[in-house]
Length: 516
Image (tube, rainbow, N blue to C red; front, side, top):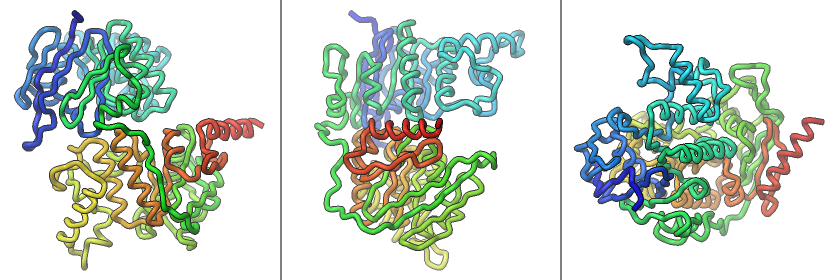
């Protein structure tokens, strides 16, 4: 019989009378990588927060059995003392402290009550060596490093706490393909060293790559556990368990959607770095989008896609911005976000928690904040009745899973938060909608719902621009795609021309042109 390092038995967790977890049971074998899959709001993160002591003993019912002992964790510190360390989706690093300081924050290396900086730096070097960052300077501020390296520092931090069970919540959500592969290979190396890992991810191809077993959670219940080598580990089988049905087409077809005249155009767009007026980030960008058309912006990380979107949307990025913006054939000036909203231009940011939402406020507040002045106010007084009616209409339209629109938006799952951001900008009744990584960190079911909303927007005659690092998403949703590379338009693809090979071919050709 296999040795189980962890058992969670009959776990029940409620929020305001609503059961987020309902009699959840699962076991993890020592030294294995267990993946937890489920739709947004299924209860995955809630379950891990119960395990790690974020939700202390007494706020839930059921038993946590770790290394054969029933545990009653009152805090994260209690679970860490036992060797259980969780790395949340939002990195918990202090940006202005050094790498070494971050690794041992709350776990300082002391001698006679005083921090031993020599020991701190030596141990930090050793831990970075274990995660493949042996040559990194441990004294630089952590905010000078990329997200991929910061994620590895989080793992080094966990190793410094002598973790036996490592929980990773969406560890590759903000990483590119190369960084994701590096992180997944590190997890496999840790497994060889005896580490047990639990990984939560919506990237099913990554789960199939690293996991020994997969536990599927749906609506707060454990549905099944699949074992590698014994059960079907295909993405289609995992999706069936997550959503309770076959999902044969991940990208809904866009039918009865005639493409009309050009309603959005950018001409000769140039942008310089906000901190370096001599560093040009975007050079002579020319794009256009027609009514009813969904246009993609493809490219590698750092190509300039988000910088382009933010610079257009009220000059939210960059300096020395030049070029012309045309909406419905009319040249418009968009120097502020308020100008953009007035000109019926909307932008859904890739970072919903920083730029998209006020997490401590309600769903209703977040949905209507951008449209409040124009659509829900009369002489400066909010028409609360019309506001409430519209919010309820949009809650049902895009299927935000909540009992009440007065719930704090920060308590929603990532997918439902993304829907609230989308609703916020739809309520401004834009003609042009720019969606930056609209499905990052959300499950296939929620993705399908967002793609359906995108199709409806196109069908109603809107111009939609999608920025995505997932090439299959660009291929599955877009009529036409511009490929950006090093701040320039490297090429344009339409219809059946849009393939992963063609996109990479355009990028490589542009690189060769630059070398010449």
